[in-house]
Image (tube, rainbow, N blue to C red):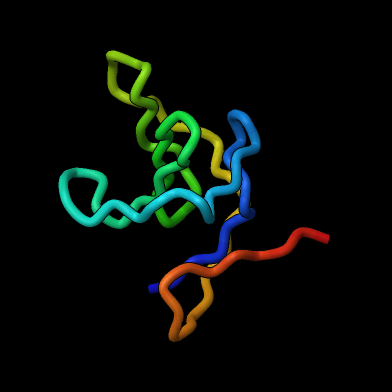
Length: 79
C-alpha cells in the first residue's frame, strides 16, 4: 500500500523526497533520509538510526496517512 508522509525528517528537517526507499534487507520498503540515514517505516515510525549501536525502542510516529497512486514516491505539501 502507498503512504503519504510530511516531506521532512524530524531530526534535521531534511526533505525525505531526496532520500531513497530501501529495496532489501530488514528495512525493505522503508524510506531513508538523505542527511543522516534515519529510516522510517510505512507508519512513519523511525525504525533505524545508523549512529545508534542498539535496537530502536518504540518511537513517536511522524505524520503519515494511507493513500494510493500510480507514482513511486508522493510528496505532501504542508499547509
